Image (cartoon, rainbow, N blue to C red):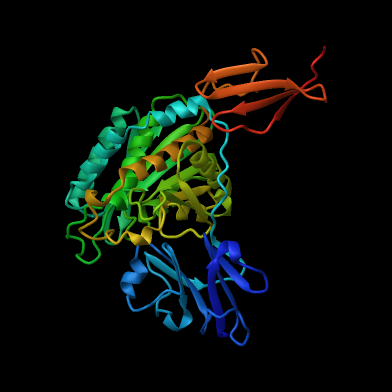
Length: 440
């Protein structure tokens, strides 16, 4: 954007027409040509730029730049502050486009609780998750080219084998060195598809360099331990489709592990992928309300909707969504047209510890991580399809059926002579028609 503009940040609920706009969750940035009026509090800028960053990476590199709007992972800055570089591995700068929703806040819409999914969600073990994450964060570093990265991978491989996964390690080229990806497979019952659960295992200390301490508790011990815990939960059930766990190397140097994995996939294997769930930083509570950002692209919009529904049904998470993917291992899959998305803690830029020696267990919020994992496993159950699940609509054993504490089904004949069903699981759901004709 070259022409000067007048801009104003307002609550999204107050945003009115007549101006160009971009939405960032609960805030909307409005702008018009600089010679037009926009409100007493408006300011001028030579142009507007959108920054997408990992943590506070852009703000750390450019501490003198004051954002015009700060929404954590996403910033708006004046074009007067445009850096010489347009991007690196950890931030990107591009023009702010009018009429875009950079971050959305979908209205929470809960589904009817599935007892089998609720049981699975209830089996999440915070103790198991904490133990795995504590082990990973106890290493001095998990830099992709370090011996202790191999130690971390050995630990994760042992955990996968103990859970019944067949494992493989593939070589990843990182600059002039070599790292690895760890892949764990558990076959389904013959559904033909595969669902991937991924995270990057490596950590980094930017100020200190490759040999410096990099415990990487949140980035990304939290996501790696999440892969192991979800793998544990899923190993307790039978699924129609294959489960594949992947821990990538070389992410912090430029997504090398995921890029090379996707590039190596034959077309037939790509076509089998039903979903890719990537976790990167899920354990730092940076907002008053526990918040998760679901980040993907149009190809992954269905997955995002499933996760948002799972969050509303089985957790207390606030969900934000973005179709602006950047700088994590979901991106190479999206670029290949494969449905993939990232789950990441809300407002991750408020976490100033990542990529330093202070990214330790002390700053984690175990309850937030557990909620994100509950959301994730509930959605995974739908994508994997349980073996032997009842797919038919409910059949009444009477006009009113109670099948659990606080859970009721009501069946009634409508004026169309069809059978109708209404459910209560804490709140009443709308009537749904079960079809057919009830004969008197």
